[in-house]
Structure formats: C-alpha cells, structure tokens
Amino acid sequence: MTNLLEIGLSLVVLLSFLLIGGGGYLVLRHPAERRRGVLMVVAGLVILGNVYLLARPSGASVF
Image (cartoon, rainbow, N blue to C red; front, side, top):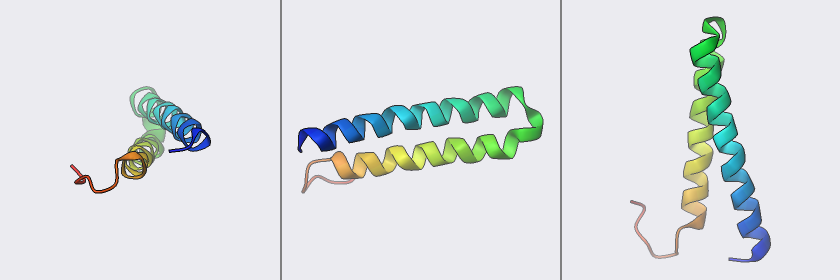
C-alpha cells in the first residue's frame, strides 16, 4: 500500500474508535439517546470491517 493510503486508513480507524466510544457514552449515560448511540456503535463497527477488508492482503480469506 502507499503511504497516503496507510495514513488514511489509520485516521479512519482512529475516528471509528471515537465514533464507537461516543456511541457507548450515549448508550450508557443518556437513556433518551440510546438509539442514536447504538447506531453510532454499529456504524463504527461497519467502518472497521470495511477497513479490514480493504487492508487485508489480496488472496487472503476473509476470516
């Protein structure tokens, strides 16, 4: 991979961790915003899955 792609993927992973953490905070601390928090956690996990699929070596199995 190129340096720019590696930097971009690293930033996306960091931001997805922030998204998951913020969603967890909403779920645990603000019961009125529980649905939004769950959606944020799911979105963060989907983003991490996409990064995994993009960054894995070609020809490797998915799991």
